[in-house]
Image 1 (cartoon, rainbow, N blue to C red):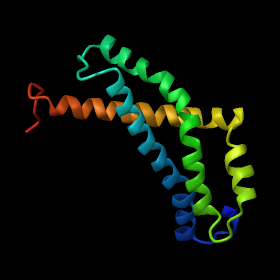
Image 2: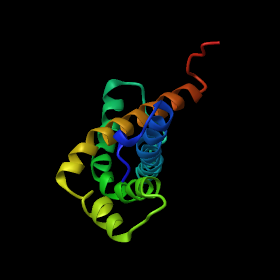
Image 3: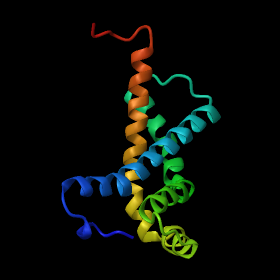
Image 4: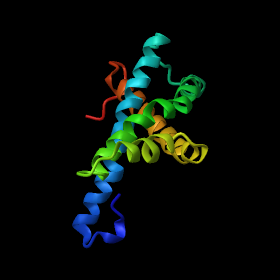
Length: 142
């Protein structure tokens, strides 16, 4: 694994940040959107009224799924992270022990829980806002 202190200059450092952080987190967003659409479909949610109670209940509905989603998402994000970080010298033993097995620990779970909740509820809020703006009776800015 390439250490950041071996990178010289801002451009290579930004490449390392993009490769090790931004791209795997984009995978998290992708899978959370799929999960949220699945939850909406399973509960047949078509409309959320604009009251604090309805929005709060809607958000609480997703909480158990977001908490459990770590176990479903982590193999994909860690695989992407491994493919980007270990290139060109891949080792199945390193992949399995460092990126997969060690990812299923409580310390990693609690480290990723806040970002997953933040990304999940951020995505949920953006989705609610876009649905509200698409409705025909919502106020228009223009």
